[in-house]
Amino acid sequence: MYLLDANIFIQSNRAHYGLDFVPAFWEWLDRSYAAGMLKSIKQVGSEIAAGHDDLTTWAANRPNLFVPLDTSCGPHLADVAQWANSHHFTQAAVSEFLSVADYQLVAYARAHDMTVVTMEKPDPQRKKRIKIPDACNAMGVKWAGPFDMLRAEKVSFVLK
Image 1 (cartoon, rainbow, N blue to C red):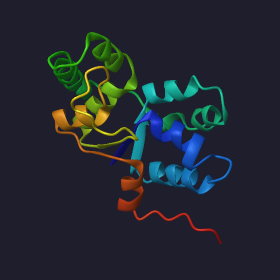
Image 2: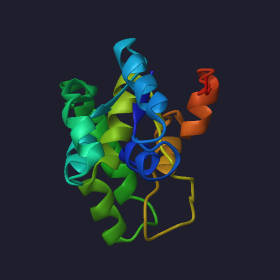
Image 3: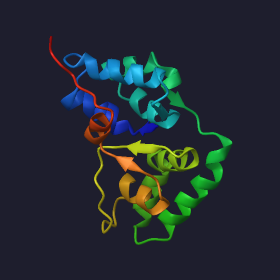
């Protein structure tokens, strides 16, 4: 099962899969959610809601796609926070990481054995920003890029 980062929705809409010209991507997200293959967390939904655009409307019409954290996430939130605080990252990087959906995504995925899907790339030497793939790697959480997910699921958007 996949857990989607905010950038999957936001960057897809702005670049690769705009709601106005690749509706098949968004239909695939709907079908995959209905089939129990993917979801995201409420914090990601909140980040999308801050945008006030067509994606905001799309997400608002799918409130169940964005799930709240549950009690099983608690220990994993603590583990991810401890990892972030005990490494080479600047305090500003740690503060930012802990204030956005990123750390909650990693903890939720770890608690529920899910694969985080993000457009971020690992950069383990970076000190001023904590990347989701680096946190996933440290926590033993699987992660993938969106194109990896689409290929793994054999998705094909074909004009007819």
